[in-house]
Image (cartoon, rainbow, N blue to C red):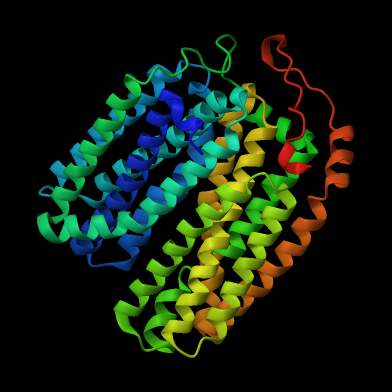
Length: 422
């Protein structure tokens, strides 16, 4: 696991990624608290989450198409600097609150954030793939994400409690300023995927590229379905802790911590088993998710529920990084940023349906049934993934995938199958 850390530019990208996840957690918590306190309305909070997470996922591919062929050494520091400015303005607005303006700024920040995440993912893949270190680098990235997933909400809560919303937003401003400086001096690649040619039509062309490459199409579809199933539990857990287990807010916090601890353990498991086949990793991790949800569905006490949450968190962590890695391995540099923007958009849009489904089931029945549905869905997903990702089937799909030429005559034939598919 040390080989990728010997690459200085990757170390900078990894540090920026960790800062980004911490900043996301702190900023989301602070802005959600600000909007709810000032409006006193669940509708206002809903509007914030729509503007901060859902709508940006629709805008990001358009922004990536305009930026992915420009030098990452300039684009990424500039994007993080823009986020620093946006959070500075949001901090200034805490004493001059206007819901419409805050929502517009949240939308702008969300669009910049997901665009920067996609471009940074593409830059990491471009740096690591020639050294055959993509799996190792993604394992480290996933470990950083899992640690920040646990620490971020706690940090945000402490900052808001100690210094108020303005302190949290100013802290975010500093986070993004540091990231901008880190990447401006990181020695990132001087050029994007391709410097020539218009950006018009690139999103459509990238979608066509995914559609024609059967393997990418299968992976994208699998991830979309998986994200719906795996996020059914999100609106359920608080009701489950409060009303089914009678564990109160502390119980809900413990469930979230157990899920995060499981995610950290899953990161370690992926780092050890990253050379296993994609089908094995994805289907096995989906089984872990299904078992975790099943334990939650029947848990008679908080302690049993914590075990289920930890198992589910481990499965979620492995499935996410395994699927993302094979998409990156499959995609050529020419399309990397746009394909990653599609993957990031799916990861923000699909959970909306899962959250809605979980909320409806819980409202009409009870939280345990929602967990049971998630368990059955996850186990079914595992069976389907194991069938679709069989090495023989992938080899067949590769033979059926035609060669395609990119804009400007560049050959963008799909990358050969990853070793993780063997």
